[in-house]
Length: 110
Image 1 (tube, helix red, strand yellow):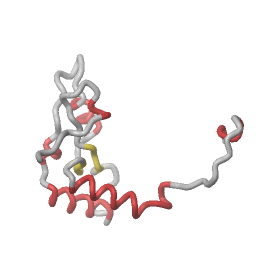
Image 2 (spheres, rainbow, N blue to C red; image 1 turned 90 degrees about the vertical axis):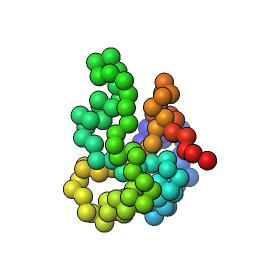
Image 3 (cartoon, one colour; image 1 turned 180 degrees about the horizontal axis):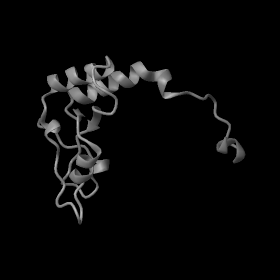
Image 4 (cartoon, one colour; image 1 turned 135 degrees about the horizontal axis):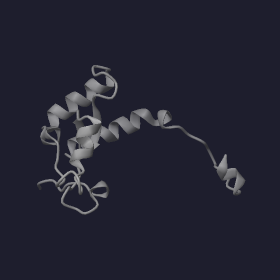
């Protein structure tokens, strides 16, 4: 382990799966706050949505406009294995007007 080479000794090693229930609860909370949604876009669509010199302006996929109830249902369906692998994923609802949208969440109406 690289960290031990530089002299760091972790107090404890954990894995994401150790905290699955808490991560799942946080994901549902993000959906309820309209900060995340379930997306069904292909890799090609995702690259096009990023925009850029050869792809035009950034744009948000149609799935981003789904309501909270639809997203919660789809997210629970994901957990229950109702989608084929890699056909649905939880995605942050970004502010695509920001020059660095990966680091910003879209504001929600108050």
